[in-house]
Length: 77
Length: 147
Image 1 (cartoon, rainbow over the protein chains, first blue to last red):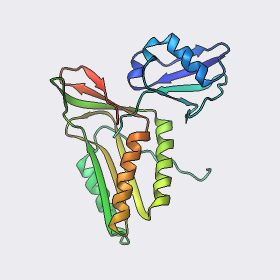
Image 2 (image 1 turned 90 degrees about the vertical axis):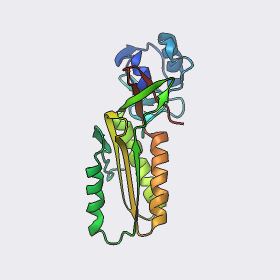
Image 3 (image 1 turned 180 degrees about the vertical axis):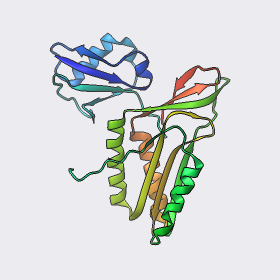
Image 4 (image 1 turned 180 degrees about the horizontal axis):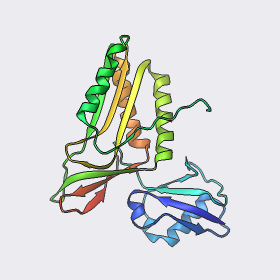
């Protein structure tokens, strides 16, 4: 299964926006572990996901062609 | 949900003092208003490890940020008897000393305007997906993090 990942702030410095094949990964908790293997810089960082423009608050099912945003702590204002 | 109108709060570049003055002037016809409260965020020339911040470059995840701002706006309007609320946040590079955030609330009496303004500022700093990259005078950078 393929999804699109987009990233922001300091995370965008080491993860570029791209389509990735996540094989049989089906939810955001498993994807988090997978991404931390692919991008070890993520380990120990604070970040949140948004799936298709919705903030991920609890483990969520991922579908083909979903857009996953990886967001470090906010610093607006 | 179908009748919701999502307002864009983002402006490219600094917020001009003249724009703020115009916004105030536009309210003179709304004579039910008795109190305005305004918050302006200004880019601070912080000194970090001997280096001075020259500017902050702001980026956002716009669809999520506007959705979240809409939610904050609705919640604050439901909580306080406000006549109006205006929010503007800069994107792009804003130099130290320039205005990057403008929040403006108005009501019949001062208290709701003051409380709503403060609540909007606190909530948007905590909840809007906006990132500030502090650019030092020597062109190196670090990412800000709101407490």
